[in-house]
Length: 340
Image 1 (cartoon, rainbow, N blue to C red):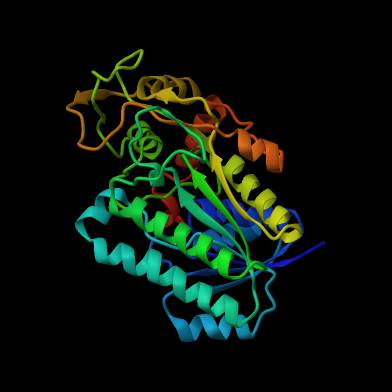
Image 2: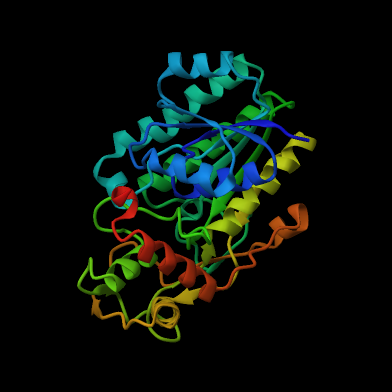
């Protein structure tokens, strides 16, 4: 049955791919985005990919009057909440920006949801809420001890949602903790579009491949891992988007507080990702080793078994597919969405 869903941050990397999945499942979508880290071109491309039209509203989740107007003019069954700021390094330099956007913005959104009797939310959280436990595989029961401001803001919103559910049993929430999203839509029309120098491995490799960056810096080759480089759990963004659709469908039928890891459960090293990307692109990626960065872990990866048990979800795309799709996106859009 078709539902009407508000997707905050729906023009962003993960949000845009999730909107595609929702539209293909015949749901009605309204996107809310302030375009601080995205562009309206994404909306045009989603419409082209799906052949579907939908409303997009330029607004900020902290703008209570705007949010109130949106809820008063639509009858939403659920909010899928991606909107927020997300760079770990920046969060340490500008913590107030992160608490304002991620925590206070989410509270404003939730207050207006409750006033409009919208009692279902899928929340975009992060594996950063776990911090640095003494073991590499994280289950949903791993103690939460985030080591940076970004992770702390995600944990705070999780706590708000859990407390809200306790106070209001009719409220239904799915908290989704991502590991390392990579890849792009198979069309090559939408993908990861970092502003400035990329913070994440895959877009950095992609920019080296097209000549935008001279070489990849690998921070640390003396970790206690098989090849000395850091191991991470990379997940294709389309697998992640499909998980959001399934989580939404689950909370439509069940008044629950659900917390799930979304990862593959299989980590890859930096050197293994480089090798897979070279195979996908046919281009040699120059790199240089540098000293470890403070706070980087040697390895971590998801235990995704709970998501399979509850939703029937598991990641299906391989590291080769992740690299192929990332490369297709980068080739078609060497300057991101700027060339449109």
